[in-house]
Length: 450
Ligand SMILES: Cc1cc2nc3c(=O)[nH]c(=O)nc-3n(C[C@H](O)[C@H](O)[C@H](O)COP(=O)(O)O)c2cc1C
Ligand code: SF4
Figure 1 (tube, rainbow, N blue to C red):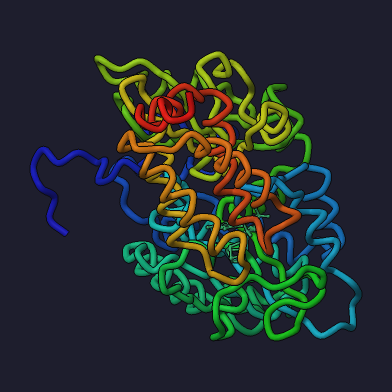
Figure 2: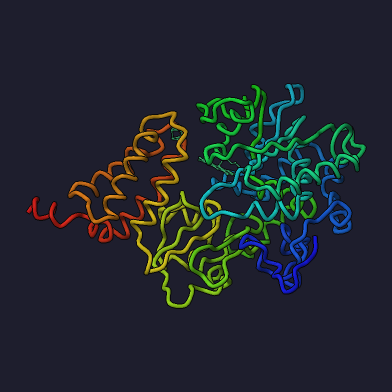
């Protein structure tokens, strides 16, 4: 491809904002291999930069139990939003030597509003993911892997397809991976573009060619997942952590947070919204929101921070005073929100929370799979109410109805976490910015009440 003179290496805002000089193998395990020009790293370059050494050594020297023990001790927590321990998940799946071998699925559906971290790894460093999948598959005795990719990620699809082909040709996938006696191959599957396909059991249904609604749990995928076999589903970033852990060990991985968090490793953090430099950074897990925002150059001129979502559209709003909290799973969870994907979305004082919520709920209502009534009917109802409040035509009981939704669509009452995720920003918006909602109640109806 010909370079366009003067073209920035930042083709999209999802590019990394750290120079090659800042990224080192011992401090930036996810991104140190990335090039300044943002081009995809092919097999030769990946191998020159120690690529596949961790997987080959793991297959040679470790048992599956060793790998799981190492991942557990390192405290690698799932980067798909839930923060569940990867090692623990794998230990619950690894249920014996003689069971039918199952599947490993990489969740690359990335449709969370404001989230664009996996895209970076998928487009530019596909071999890191493949290497992580080899390690995870070996630990879980998976015979086959799937990458379930968001269909709009066309460049990622191209990059992954090339990388899978390169790895196969080099004997790193297929029969007898790297001469180890372990067989494992990967297929790339592009979804049809639904947010609910990111939910792991809906994803499995979709992969099997069925309607993409979630499945009841238990049984969990680790016991009975794709085609009834033990199945591990992990996020792209989670799997990309495995090579570093196996290469450098538990103490190194845990030390990466520099005491900022009990969680191990680094995190791909990002910022979107009205900031000077939206983008992505690989930073120690537990980095404070303020530092991440500073790296993004702060709010754009003329804008002041009113609120922020710490990790995607299904997390709760935090306030400017929360910027000094360490951005890790447990801390953010204590303040009525979730770390989620760790990609911050800022809200300016000049933006309306009601309009923002209407926009978000429209997305969640459209993406409901329609399987259970509270979500299928409740989400469009919140949209109608928010639209009326936005127009200044709300009725006096509208805020109470919204509050009832935040309770009625909680995890105990809906079939999956989609509706509770949709309610988290709404509940926190009502708690922090009630006056903005009240301002949308029509004067005429207030007079009627009085
Ligand atoms: C509605 C919904 C959408 C989700 N979307 C994604 C997604 O796009 N990517 C992802 O990794 N996890 C997503 N998840 C979480 C997955 O169900 C699952 O927990 C995750 O892939 C597990 O990976 P991890 O343990 O590595 O974090 C979603 C969950 C829900 C409820
Ligand atoms: S909560 Fe929503 S997305 Fe989840 S099963 Fe029910 S209808 Fe489907």
